[in-house]
Amino acid sequence: MSLTDPQLNEFHEKGFLFFPGRLEAARTLELQQALETVLERRGPEVIREESGGTSARLVFGAHQYSEPFGRLASSPDFVSPVGRILEDEIYLHQSRINPKMGMGQGGAWTWHQDYPPWKTIDGMAQPRCIVAAVFLDACTPVNSPLLLIPGSHNHGLLDSQPMTESSRHGYDLHAITTTDVEQLADEHGIEPLIGPAGSVALIHCNLVHGSANNVSPWRRAILYLVYNAVSNACTGTSRPWYQNNRDFTSLSQVGNPE
Ligand SMILES: O=C(O)CCC(=O)C(=O)O
Image 1 (cartoon, rainbow, N blue to C red):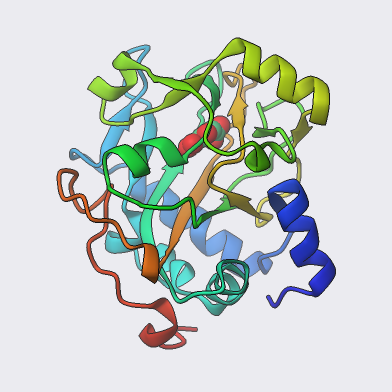
Image 2 (cartoon, helix red, strand yellow):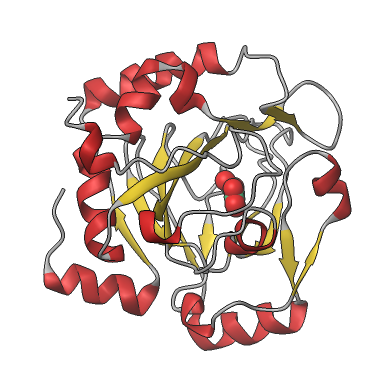
């Protein structure tokens, strides 16, 4: 997947690019099958929903213990466009899957930017980081698609409050203020990411986003691959491997695993 100059301009203007149905059907199916095993996983890398019950809210690090996810994460399909946007060698800072189970089990995500915990906890100096969102299920208007505020990344790092309950559960979500959300949404609008399983979005780490809880009967799983520029490698060491990968080897040197 190589990017054209107009796509590059669109990324800088909107803070994301969306490629509906980007992965081949066979690869999407392989990931969906691998997801079933990943969701069985027990361990600190699996963060449960705060509402109680057993549903996973996030499963970190699948690229390390599930071969199809590992192969995808170092695929040139991601390494090439992300490297072009960041104009640098890149490595994978983190991967996480949000299965967003149906019937209200998959909880809401308040409006936030992804960068604050990486900056404040992991020591990521600059927001030179791109999140590749890979749809493992179809995202429709009814199963709580990811909502983005286009152009919000150009407002820089916004004031935010760490949500203590989330921190306790290992995921440090920094909620931005209602005033900022209202102003940004009035200025730029809100776009839902809707598309079939296998769709891919490349998202700037300062883009404001969120989602409602999934009251539909259908799961809405998305894999998030977080790529950082090698020259921006994190200096913090407090978080474990599955949240702050310390291997900064450039993915272009890992070779083509396809
Ligand atoms: O998948 C979602 O609904 C939201 C997830 C999210 O915002 C995140 O992981 O930062």
